[in-house]
Image (tube, rainbow over all chains, first blue to last red; front, side, top):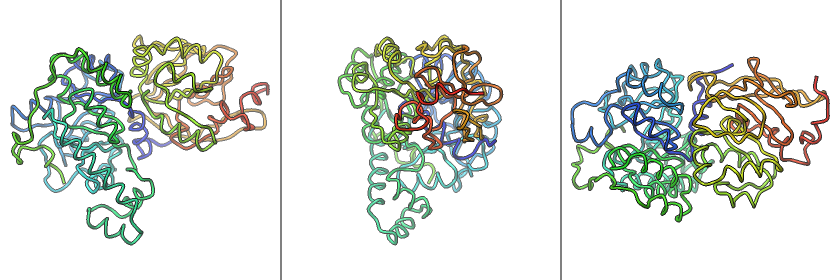
Length: 293
Length: 195
């Protein structure tokens, strides 16, 4: 019998497809998320919008809070650790978290290295802005990739940019000759074997989800139509005026993303969405997506 | 609706069977067999109820072949140990969700399956936060067991698996329930005595 292999890690990511993963900061929010149809929750101390507002160092969540959420819901519970902070990841593994997000939303612990994720039995998800970054994370052992977007902004523009970039680069790779793939691997800074795999499959070798700025049912539908296989919604739910209704609406729009009538119905009668930020209001040095390489 | 449906589409394509996604009651008019995939059973149950799929699915299941893996098996059960889920009651079993623990306990192992006296095969089985069948009625045929619990059961034209053959690209279970040409088709094996 084997446990914690790469295949088994990717297996759980496969089960989450077509669903919505929601950021929650306490058991009550986790319950709202599960009741609304979330396929997993992400336990974190502050949602990205508050991290952005409050500043300070943002770290792994308190184990007690994580356990409280694990005791409350039956769906998978994910949690974030800082980029490169493998000791936080070890703690999360001990807590039997179902998925670890090595996340740019928290303050990075290592400016040069990400975690060597093959050392863990628990699967990891990592953010990316382009194909090279995605493949570097997969090489380190990530079993799921999400586009970074700009967390806590309520602005979909960066998530779209990153998903479009990844998809365009994948299409490009599928058209290259063998010798060109070597040059491409060098240019995007990714292992050749993974670039060759992408060229053959026409997609990433692990599930590809979207995150960072999704605030409405139509945002979720947009990301799914652009090629995301599942969406993460962070601040968008619990920074809105009606978290339970909005959570359910985003789930419906994600499932029925190709059916504009259903997305329209799901969008009807919701209260105010989170206010959101224009990218020009976020100085480059405060952009979370710039963290990690 | 939610889950690893894409892998099931791949499996069906490999055995030459066309498949379409099913998300609303009218989608059921176009098909003559159904796979309920792995995923989150709470999410699927909610979507089934929101889109008035419950009655149509039960009606469809009464006269057509249905296969469920993991969360799909949970939804096919008569009784589930979780009141957030309304099971369809297609197979007379009692089932316990996440019975083996969290993701860190998810595992892969070889299990011997007995389809008939002449068809015994060892296959890889991947259990992902898997459920456990805790009670089943006498007329249900057990095709395979793991840890003293059935993990593959056949009940008339309903096939329930607590593991994921679609993750390991094993197509024999799809053949059992959908492929009339296959020697494993359930109507060919159901009358054979299994010791």
